[in-house]
Amino acid sequence: MGNPVVYFEIAGKDVNKLNEFYSSVFGWKTEADPQSGTCMVNNLSDQGIPGHLFPITDEMGIDNYITFYIQVDDLQAYLDKVESLGGEICIPPQEIPGNMGSFAMLMDPSNNYIGLYRMPTTQ
Image (cartoon, rainbow, N blue to C red; front, side):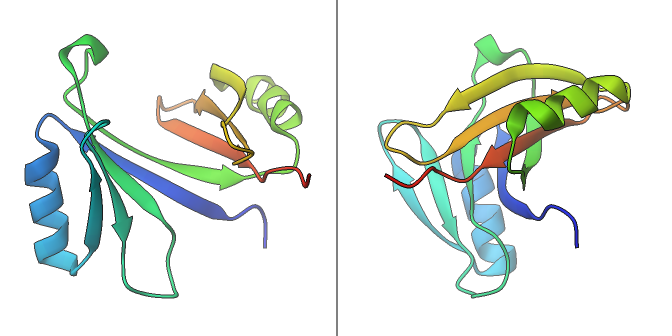
């Protein structure tokens, strides 16, 4: 198998409504973070991937958002490949604080916003 999908994000103007919807339809349990307004998702299964729900603000200029993250071993090498095949780099490699790994964001040729994720380095 190639690189796995390891994380997802779903966002909308009303994160509480999203939280209620996904919790009711799929039985997901969430843990809300009052400071950021995000809801971490626990799908109560050892199958599937982690993710979170978050609110969209007016400054973002969008009404809805969904993406997933693909695990890779070298963010820049994959971003170079993305560009060579008609994609676009939206966010260059960024370290996630607390040695949580790093990520980058790309736009595919159909304008889908996709994340790349590299596992943290060992300390």
